[in-house]
Image (cartoon, rainbow, N blue to C red; front, top):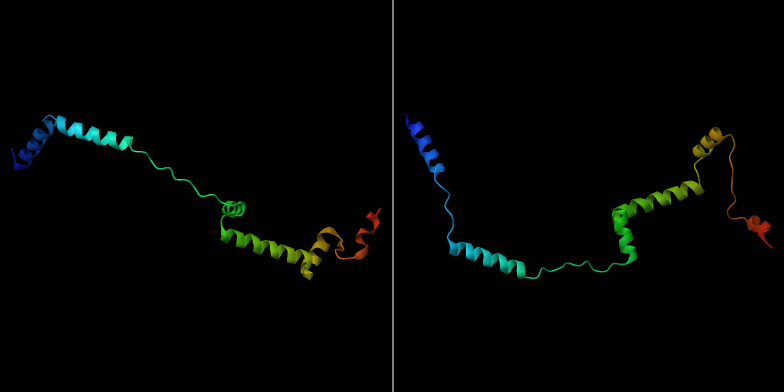
Amino acid sequence: MTTDDKMLEAAFAQARTPDVMPSEDALNRIMMDADSVLAAPTPVKRRPKQGIGVMILEAIGGWTAFGGLATATVAGLWIGISPPAALTDLSAGLWGATIEVPLLESDMFAGLEG
């Protein structure tokens, strides 16, 4: 037998020995510690009350998302009120005619008066 075989046989012999059990005193102390941990009340973390604005802001993704939405809204409103000439030509080419809707004329609601 070589020295490697002897070392391997010694390791297997040590592995074959029965497991060592902890003493009764150690098991009792472990159980007492577990009982004390289970008996302690667990603190409940509660979220502070938030306003509806904060909840909506969190729902859309925070201030960065709100900034992007505000920018897109302003750009869409700007393009809708004062469209570039290229956009007007494009819509005329697609639909055949442009339609203008008067927004600030005084007689716009004339037919609705009773």
